[in-house]
Length: 446
Ligand code: IFM
Image 1 (tube, rainbow, N blue to C red):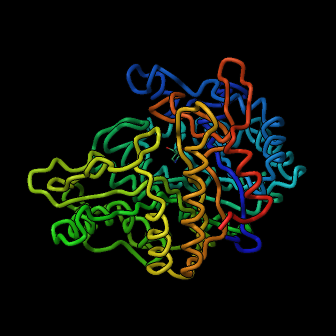
Image 2 (image 1 turned 60 degrees about the vertical axis):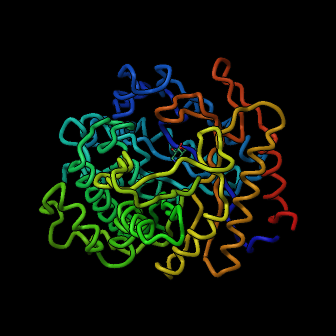
């Protein structure tokens, strides 16, 4: 089972989850610093203050990547390192870190893939309104330009946002992520301003000559609990609209879908969507990043409470997983990834895809069979999608290292490299060795 020539093999991380050094070199506070220091928000009171101390240990981490034969490494830049207050002149010491990291990666033959926003909004910008405020989108474009100016001579692959669904719906809707607001109108306004931020930044990066501009979503494979049920089919349409089409259609199909706009209008007037915004959001991209972990099953059921993260989904039931689950309790179903990739290819043709995250948390005891089996199954699913015509250019495992798993703190371990948080010792797991061999052969046993 051979993958195409040039298929990109790599791993991914995110700034707040691994860097630590929360107060070093002029870094300002982010919403995740505030949130994680608020009692009761993150398991066991964990914070990203130290995390994997990658800020200081990046040479060792790059050496580990090289030992696994990674061709690409996706990391995110911490906005509050670059602009401690979220606006104004860039902090050179913050940018210096990414300069050093990029140089180390290039020296090791690893392609640096930069994500500009992986949820760590500068706290000052939240104090000024956060993502529900339009100005944040403009601040993001300025920040993107500052990072591009420093790294653009060496970095080809630029991704604006990671999973704006989480930033908007979990950050401002259900409140399980920073900044922890619970306000459906704010969540929907955030969706739009995140998309606008992407469009403004993508335009600026392109104008600066960026090699490849992308956005990463976590598109859901939304499936009916009963394929024969009309009520379930309706539930799929609603949840697919709120999760997928609200992002994909303005990015890749010219504008928001009318059914989703009417849904949103139940919670907020649409005055935040201004003339010309959809054109800005639809600025051409070179790649769509896809983060996939697990399918989402839904059923139409009168009286059901709906999904906490999806405002207005009363009468929709989200059944608990059936079958095997990961350590997160997420259903393991690789075939749903094939379905999702083929759907993206069919509905939004001409946009190359890259799996920018896929992986699993498991309790790390024994020889890591569960993670290997998860990765193997999902790589086969990617291969199946490619065979059915989907233009998938690469696969980045989540994650290189065990790290701070947001509201679960350090309890959940996604890494292919184990991190002992007491000593910061890194130990490749069996899955890392397995992945090294897959990369070396560019194939899986048939
Ligand atoms: O850890 C996260 C990552 O930050 C974004 N995608 C999902 C991962 C697992 O929850």
